[in-house]
Length: 94
Image (cartoon, rainbow, N blue to C red; front, side, top):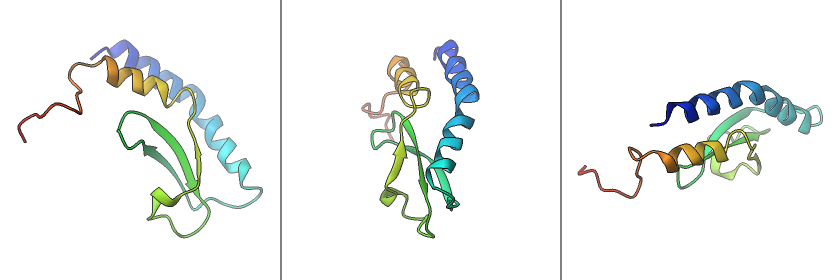
């Protein structure tokens, strides 16, 4: 695994995550989110942020709000794509 890419991803998260959470909090126009989640895509490659204002926090796949910040989604996809040790299509004998 290319640890330089992972370090860059970590740095991007450190520099930008607080602003994205602030954006989520401001989008509610005074409502308090009940939950903010890091949700993986169905192919497990990237992450996006989602949030819910109701008590329906268990059904995260029904959450309508979501953002895919540049620092969070594509860099993680690039890490997975470049890493030979990660292959979601290869049967590992389980």
